[in-house]
Image 1 (tube, rainbow, N blue to C red):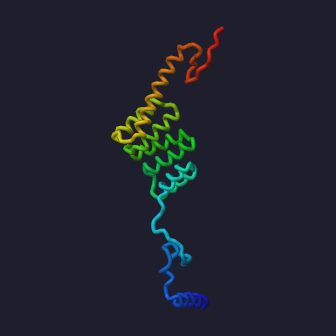
Image 2 (image 1 turned 90 degrees about the vertical axis):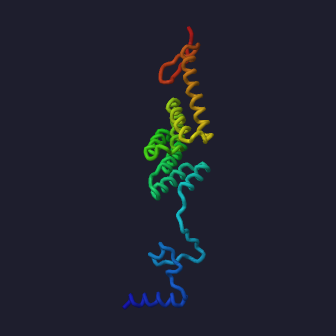
Image 3 (image 1 turned 135 degrees about the horizontal axis):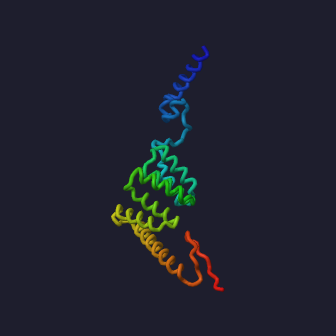
Length: 192
């Protein structure tokens, strides 16, 4: 009997309002049978978490951007764009080795995704792997058909750093005052 009274009063209330409660409910609230407060904006489509992450990256909020990219991955799956975005945020946080792995995973998903190639080159440059970075930038430049100034600039920088490194090692190895000890370590030589 008690259940019947509750149902009757809910039906009586909707009759007094002149509208059905379900007309004002969004799909989630229909299941809960709770109406949204008057004036509440109900979003018909979800927010693009990649866009949110990109804006957070521009604002320097790399940790929050990484979270937005993870939400994008949970919403749409791990595609090359999402994986590259995750890698970019990881790189911005200083986790270079982890970012390199993520860029390589993005390329495993889609080996024609130019931003992943470019970002992989940046990660390699951060690790002073100029030769491999040059090859990666050349590949990105070819895939992009030379349209991107950023990739062209990155390629020029990789070539310059690679040539400068070779030049510095040969000159410093034989030059006065420096001794190369291996692994890129130089020591100052003191003449007796």
